Length: 313
Image (cartoon, rainbow, N blue to C red; front, top):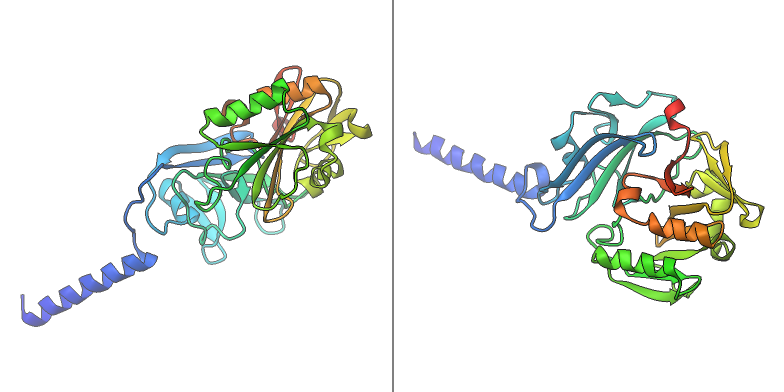
């Protein structure tokens, strides 16, 4: 090799190394827990793809993670997912598209910019957004986001109970401890709701005293939850993807839902029509019953993913 060719080869190698360090090539593998990638459809009702404990690299975005593990088509310059493994949105003018969540929280930036962190649960879901384009938090990544927070930043977890000595309160706290989540107890409605993950364990008549919780009564267009308490908490309407009531349930019914009313607030509700409903919700407060779900209702000991009626669509 001539001196000129040798110099050119060395320069090329140096440039490629520099580009890799700037995020234009694969970076070094990151230490820590692996990342779970889940692809679902219809509000988490159907699992399309699941890959667990994936190694991620420095500066790896959610989009790159998806592209490494699935057949992906994008549009709008690569920033918007059109299809995953052949499952596509309905195209221009339709109301079905892909949305993603990290640790159960809808990210505030595009997938091509959001960097994954060790331990993250990334869920892509293709859903209809005609009823509401805004579902800002879901329960399906449990024990996330309580375990690792968001963006690698863990936030304090506070369990607020109607009765701190009740069995449902003890159950929720124990479940969090078993998942290695440090959680503090507090009185219901304790001040300081910013940058804290709150878990409210109470019947609906009590839980609704929290102003942010009342969004449930306004339907999915406001809450992102396809269920609605009515008649001062005496009944719970379970809705379909169009926001229409499919089933009305009463005594003994429970609900687990996540709300993110502002960027700095996160509220999980473990609630029900009555004490029996709260008991049922606390029993379902676990990974097995919540996995991939947007929200769940518990009726006659059966855990129902919301919205209802997906199989008929």
